[in-house]
Image 1 (cartoon, rainbow, N blue to C red):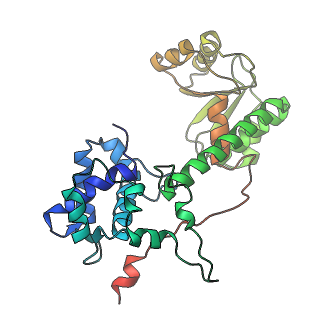
Image 2 (image 1 turned 45 degrees about the vertical axis):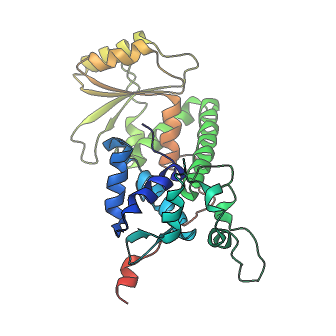
Length: 306
C-alpha cells in the first residue's frame, strides 16, 4: 500500500496508546508500520531532504497534533501516553481522527492561533493548508519543491535543445566532470568530441586515475532514438574492445532500444533528455541557487545535558 498520510495515522496512534501504558516513539513507529503492512521500501522512503523517513515523519506529526489537542501526553522525552480526553474520544468509536476532529478541542485551536511576538493573533502558518489537505508541513514543502524542480528541469531541457552542438558538448563535459568522471575539465574536454569513430563521439575516463574508460555518444535528437542507433553504438564499442558506454540524447528511447541494452554483453547506459535535465539540476550544471530554507527540529542531545 501507499504510505498513509498523517491524519490517517492519528486514530491508530491513539488506539495504540489506549492500553494506558507509556509508548516509546520508535517502537510505536514499528508497530504502526506493521499495522499498515508497509514494505521495507516504503519504510525506508525518505523525504526529499533525505533527513528522515517519510513514514516516521508522518507518525511524528500525528503524535504531535494529538498531543496539542490534549489527547496524548508526553510523560518523558521520546514517549507518549493517552490522556483522559483521548480515552473519552475512543469511547465514541470514531471512524477517523483528522484536523476537523482536533479543532473541537480548545487546546488545539489555541495552538493554531498562537500570537506572534508583535502581539497580533494570526493563524499559525503551519496550518495554512491544513483544512483542505492531508499534507504535513514537510510534505507541503516537498510538494512545492518537486513542482519547482520539475519546472526548472523542463526549462533546462528546452535550453539544451536550443543550444548549438558545440555548447551541447560542453554541457555533457561539465555534467560528467561534476559527476566525478574524466578527471579535470581540461582532460575531459580533450577526450570528448575527438574520436568520431563509427558511433562513438568521445571517450572519457571513468575515474581520475584513468583505470577504465567510457565511450560516449551524445546527440541532440528530435525524434525517438530506436534500436538501430543503439546497435550501431554497441558495434562501435565492440570494435574498440570497449565494455562501457553512455548514449546521451535530448529526446527519448524506444522500448526496443531499452530492451536491447538489457540483453547485450556491453554495459550501455541510455540517458534521455528528461534524465539529462534531472542530473543537470542535481549537479548544478546550468542552474543556480536562488534561496535556501533551513528546516529545524528539537536537538534532544542538547536538552539531555540539562
